[in-house]
Image (cartoon, rainbow, N blue to C red; front, side, top):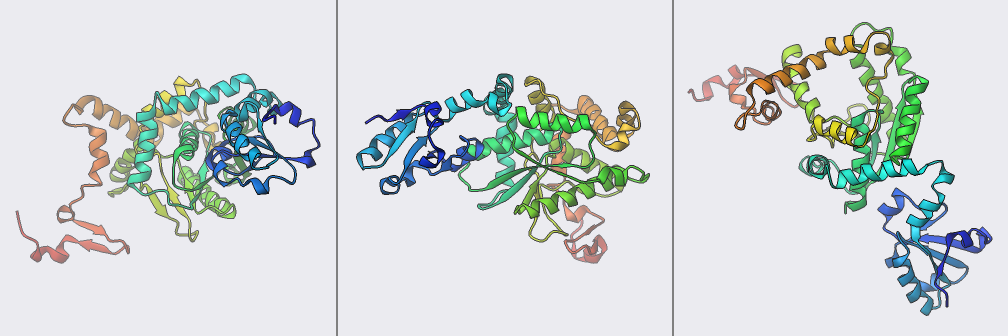
Length: 387
């Protein structure tokens, strides 16, 4: 009995007379599959349930489905193997999906660079942060928040790579909020999602219009409003976590900004429970990834992402805004200190990062406990030993 059949021949048949079954793992199926296919892993197929119509089994290349069909046909199942599998179907149908050959090459190159060239700098550190800070639990449904910049797009690709190989069952939604982008910026986000094969869900808000006339801390207010809308939409989609693309350099800059501008010692936490959305949590899986390596990934793959697309910075020169922003000042300060003082024994950026892990409360004048109560060194001064 014939086993292999070409997809083109399947399309000539009455759609009601057959069913396409993708026998790969659910994570591979979710990443991409033949239109209309149903996912049933090979280990769960039963010949007695495959007799009432014609069933076409599909795997990655057609080799596994061929072997499975041989076995099931002997057991009486009416099954055939899709010749060439999902990869051949993708190659033959990619133009029909408005994805040209160049786009597919960009996707494959980016994914390969994550697995090989930048594996240690990106994927390894991504997984380390997830494991060290326990960012993902079985059954999580995570809204990966894609803002349009280099960090969030890379985070989306890292999550896709993790989903292929990770044994923990979790779901992903790639969420894009349009807070009022101009036409060109919106198109750039959609273009990058397309060429990087990221299935984004877009929703719109009017945040930019609401903050454009605010003179005091517009960026802070905009960020808070964005986060609230992201939490709300993610919860609406059944997610219990949102993932943001903050990286290692964001963390150390935040530490210094808190000290120099806010007179406080604090850090950007790798995960946080939401105070306003019950059951929701924020995670930062890029926590250990250096910005220089994100830039290397971007440039190696010749990708162009949004930098800052808000209404506020559209009204002034970007160079002027960059020079005056607090974060830019801190970024330049860390760079200058690193160039002057860093050596094999002392890495300035690493020391800043570790400083909030090595806090000795006996040397702190006062601090706030988890309930927000201020604790002074004088409270226990007579009970603490001296030098």
